[in-house]
Image 1 (cartoon, rainbow, N blue to C red):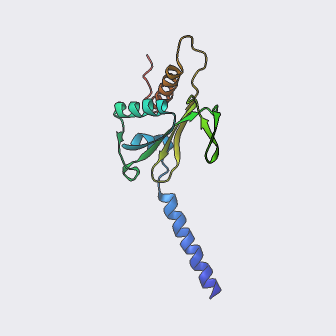
Image 2: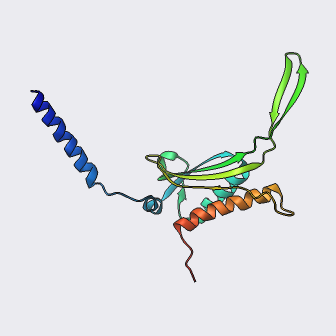
Image 3: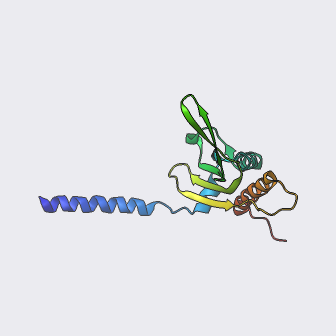
Length: 163
């Protein structure tokens, strides 16, 4: 009886392994190239989120959908904000009130492209807004860094032909 159970387990495991081996292995680049729809998520600073979101909408390679369930890929845009806030204190009827005020500067912009079905990261990139541009505002530097990041993903998918 034990031998029969063991034999049955081995046969089932062999069948499962054969099925898994029969599935073609698809590269991450092929998964990115074959995707047709994306769902975009945002966090952090608004400039990188707005710029990269608009760039995906304008590109036309992928159709942006409103529900994660309808997407082939999930695009996560993260504009990491500086942790350089300060505290404001004041007295009141209930005691001391403390509030953290953050200056809103984006220090790091990250872009993750994940498979919507299994969550696998298919592409990831990061850009830091440059800190020393004469005459450029903080917002200009965030826009430039956001566009560099988007362009690096686009170049990965659609490389520019070499002259």
